[in-house]
Length: 113
Length: 111
Image (cartoon, rainbow over all chains, first blue to last red; front, side):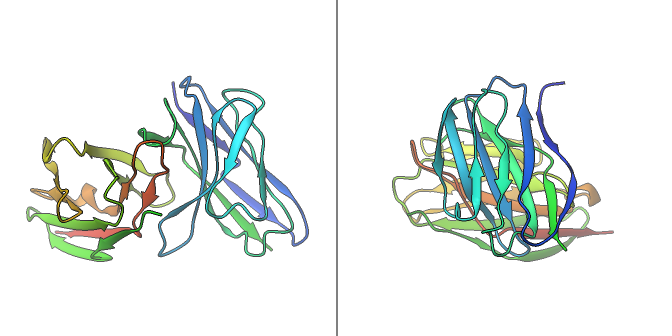
């Protein structure tokens, strides 16, 4: 099946640790995105990549890092510098870049314990 | 940058009634307006979208209207069913600009 796969679905992190969320897509989409979702708020853009080996900061990039070494993969690392990392993280992709229809994965829940 | 406001934050309707969710946007250059449905614990799913060269678009029980002059767009769901219960998000973007989301509307369809 074509789609966007995020893993793990649930992740617990101790304070001070870095964690990496995986995102893989087999839709042959050029662009990929990471969003953060908090209760009562909309989706906020963390990072996006419109092409392999290139990515840009979104609205809330501080404390996060990404890489785009392969077209189908866009992992997100939540670093210890992120002060409030507990949230629902959503990966997405689109055929073209910004302004095109984006499709979401099923999300990953990150909890800091 | 773009700012999208969405109302209401919660909406309760009886099964069979219609539901309307409204959004306003600030950037007059925005030309793409998708709507997403999100069920609990899942990723948002695109249900309908509209571009600024069209004033209305329908897909079975769902319709979206766009008023570019007033900078607002709305989602209309007719003959609501219990499976329509979810959180709905509107969004707006212009060419080569990022998608900005509203804060969501929790729709509950009661029997």
